[in-house]
Amino acid sequence: MVTLQAPAKINLFLEVLGKRKDGYHNLNTLFLKLQLFDKISLTPAKSGITISCAHPQVPASSDNLVWKAANLFRKFSGVEQGVHINIKKNIPVAAGLGGGSSDAAATLIGLNKLWGIKAQKQDLLRIGKKIGADVPLFLIPDVAAVGKGRGDRLSPVPLLKKMWIVLIIPAISVSTKEIFGNLPIGLTNKRNDVKLLIHALREADPAIIGKYIYNRLETVTFRKHKALATIKRKISALGVRAVLMSGSGSVIFGIVKTREEAMCIKRRLQDCGKVMVVKSL
Ligand code: C5P
Image 1: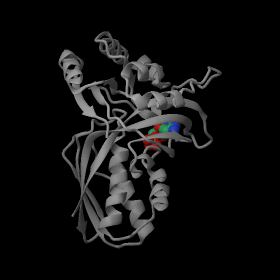
Image 2 (image 1 turned 180 degrees about the vertical axis):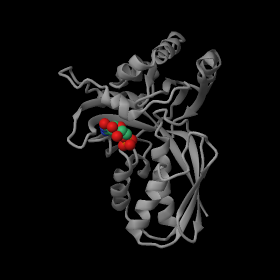
Image 3 (image 1 turned 90 degrees about the horizontal axis):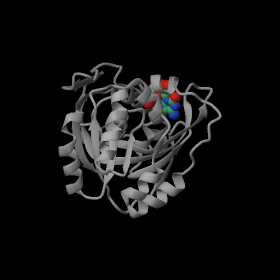
């Protein structure tokens, strides 16, 4: 059996540059991985791909990204064996934290090991891109990366200091496809502060980071789910200087200096739904 930890991510920056011919959008985004993990266990089987997961929102069918990952990797490698994949879900689902994509990437890495294929990183990245735009991020070891194109052309960002992050997980599932579909692609000025943000991240000072974090999808998701704007206001009112929605939502995160500060914010946000305190990877 092979067991892997699949981390979550947040987007500290997400600008949409325009629509592509393939239906996706070109992005300029900065990802940060978190010490919040799903656990993926791969057990050899005679044939076929089966999935088990206790979480009610996670399908145990071919709709699951881990099934797509295993199916594509089996075709690539030509093996005839099967696999059983167990997912222990800790990352909130449909929340903008990349859990499904991370599980799929861990499945590719794990099957490469389990079946002794020795596929190269480039092969895994090529297969990962077919599964979803966020999958390649989880195939590289780096804690942070800038994503261009669909978000899958990655340049690692070296980070020395770890950050404490409060995640507010509202009971709202967001469809990424729907949010991108409702995004007005107009002539508005595009934010281009990623370099300044990377500079601010070196110092890990939330007050400065707060000036440069940005998410173009926030207004679209907030228009549909007004409660999210209220949550963002509530955390900001507690004095947290770096607050943003991740991906297409619905998670709202706040970056703070210490674990103590994070725990204090958590206690004061109990009525906003589920709140988690995590550290960057
Ligand atoms: O790749 P993934 O399955 O995560 O994307 C879900 C949906 O989000 C896509 O079908 C597409 O509608 C939208 N999307 C996009 N541009 C991106 C990433 C996602 O339009 N760069």
